[in-house]
Amino acid sequence: MKIIILLGPPGAGKGTQAQRLMSERGMVQLSTGDMLRAAIKAGTEVGLKAKAVMDAGELVSDDIVTALIAERLDVPADHPGFIFDGYPRTVPQADSLDRLLAERGFKLDRVIELEVDEEALVDRISGRFSCGSCGEGYHDRYKLPKTAGVCDVCGGTEFKRRPDDNAETVRTRLAEYRAKTAPILPGYEARGMVVRVDGMASMDSVSASIAAILAD
Ligand code: AP5
Image (cartoon, rainbow, N blue to C red; front, side, top):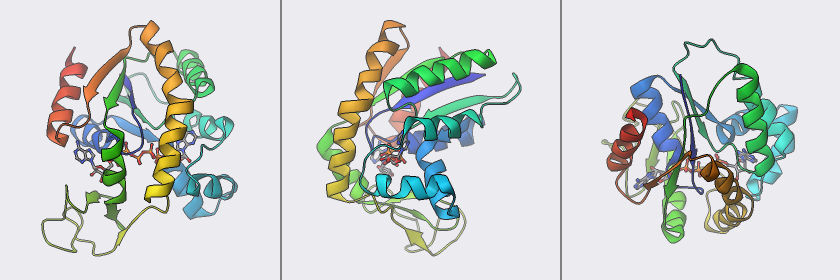
């Protein structure tokens, strides 16, 4: 079982690379952002609590996201592994993840930090959209559907944009990353777990770097 954390600010490419690892290696993506958006869509109590916080670009409480993660970790030892995408995002979340993994006898293999230029992130995020049917991700300039208006994967014709994907909210999300998420790195660095990848390279090149890290 491989267990990795993809770390990086909003728009660094965590979701893009996690999706590729899922389809290529069968590893399971655990994205707290996706789980929270699903809860909002389903109108659950968690969704109701999370919506205004997410729309403002701030962080949802540690207890809520850790509970979402915990309920997905009860798997057999021959499971192909997990890619944590957007979790942990605070020092208490990193401590909780250590505890959750230790309780199950699982071991974190790597923390892969996608290094990016913050100005490019505003551009990446404000151009992002996805298929309303299957969720395949696209971008106004970097990844358009092969046939305009038709999803490459499922043929769907409805597309959507996230409510928090606007320049103003992205700046709040970046500030939250710097203030609350970046401080988790020194702890992982002290354990020799962090590998850095140039997240400004092409998607294929980032995937190749991650594949090389996982082959180690
Ligand atoms: P979340 O859903 O986790 O969003 P995020 O971290 O802000 O990250 P994004 O999904 O925006 O970016 P990404 O790095 O996945 O980039 P992507 O691959 O899509 O969180 C949303 C909110 O939920 C938070 O603000 C918070 O409120 C809440 N939340 C979630 N988890 C939480 C937690 N643990 N604790 C508390 N609150 C939590 O790529 C972006 C775009 O760039 C795409 O269009 C893509 O096509 C393009 N792209 C990707 N890679 C490249 C490349 N190499 N070159 C060019 N373009 C690229």
